Amino acid sequence: MERFPTIGQLLAKTCSNPFVLAYDESQKFLIQCLCCLINKEPQNSGDSKLNSWIRGLLSHILSAFRFNIKEFDLFTQGLGYEPVDYCPALLKNMVLSLVSKLRESHLNGFNTRRRMAPERVASLSQVCIPLVTLPDFEPLVEALLIYHGHEPQEVLCPAFFKAVNEAFLLKKISLPTSAVVSLWLRHLPSLEKAVLHLFTKLISSERNCLRRIECFIKDSLLPQAACHPAIFRVVDEMFRFALMETDGALEVLAAVQVFTRCFVEALEKENKQLKFALKTYFPHISPSLTAVLLQHPRDTPQGCHHQLLQHVSLMLRKAVEDQACGSCRDPFESWFLFIHFGGWADLAAEHLLRSAVEAPAAAEAPVAALLWLLAFYYRPLDSHQQRAQTMVEMEAVLSRLRFLTLSRSSPISAEELRAAAGEDSHEDPMQPVCGRLIRHLLLNFLLWVPAGHAAAHDTITLMACTDEISHEITGFLDQTLYRWDHLCTEAPRPAKLARELLQELRARV
Image (cartoon, rainbow, N blue to C red; front, side):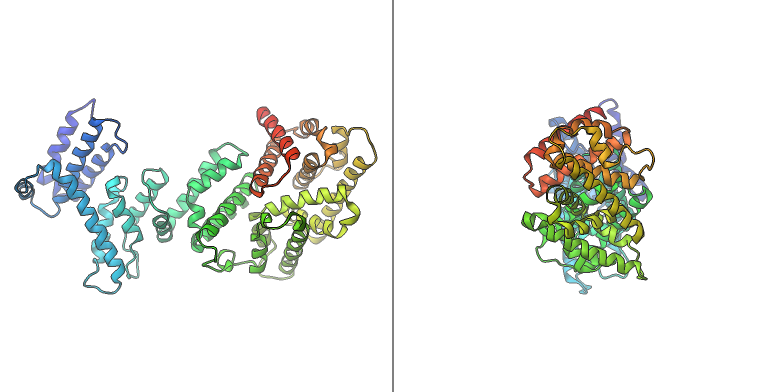
């Protein structure tokens, strides 16, 4: 408009031309052009005047639906107003009037005399498509989304849902959570687009930064909307496909866990008493197992964590063995539920390491339960024999680490720690998943056992021999600090060491 001021003159003349306004497509294009010129954040009086002028043109076009243009001008002059002053107020009143009628229609139910005709609602949604980003029309957009008629089929046009969803995802419109939930419940493609939009943001964001991931997830409104089981099931299914397509990539696992944390927080905030049964969110798993996993470790005294972990392990093991013995669902369903609450596996690794190294004689039974829990978390598709072998390998690593701490008074070297973990063995190289499990045990040793603190920096340098392992260790440290913050874990020395190692790795990567 600044470079080509004649465009404004052309628009004004076009909006006054009855032959142009008589054609529906012309009206639509004109409205779209005017909407593009609206400045949502005017910086000066010139911008404000331009916005007022554009609103006047929009009112003029919309008024042409009902009035003859000449009659409309005479009517406003008769009231003592100039059209440029009258039109913005008229636009506002028109929107409020339509919102009121939509709400009355929603409340009146089957009272057909006072309800807005479905054809008119459909037409209204179509007219609003090019207007959804205008602040003046936000109340009408919200009212249309919340409106529910009693027709067997959806009355709002799909293009309206698509336009609103696109505007919401690009932050061009602000909507309350209830309107967004209604949008995603009524139009599945919009919900799928919202989840894919979130995935895109997560992929393009900095790796191994759970706080940023949490901000993206909360900002998407998906956890709040997922309090409705129908939305949760769609989002969860898309996470499942992402997990399977990436062969259980660590970044996807982390995103699932952060999303679940945000979802549970939203569920607790919305209503302490669940509106829907747990079975509606996780239909393939026993509600009693889901209820146990939903418990927050923070709500349990630290001294009782061992018993709680053992209880989780026994319930999960029973579910897996039942599924493996001819159930219609395979153990993947139990694992998929378990990884939503991956903090239990991390807590099990910490307790396993500390129990085995610090007080091995007093913790034989709990150690066996924790070994099974970790073997299942890291290798869910293993057979019973394969899982038993993994448990034996973990126990051997723990024994060697325990021997190192008890058999000598001199400092432990990084090479000795790697040898105890079996990482320097060239004869029998570990499979990737098993290697990740052993590395995580060793990392917990470095953080929690005083004998490992001195060798931590050198050990990390030797372990991070490839970019992939460097990213894995960075992700482990970031996730550990994130979990400790949320659990309010009091571990000043391990936390300080973890931050130092994380900073060192990030500077290197």
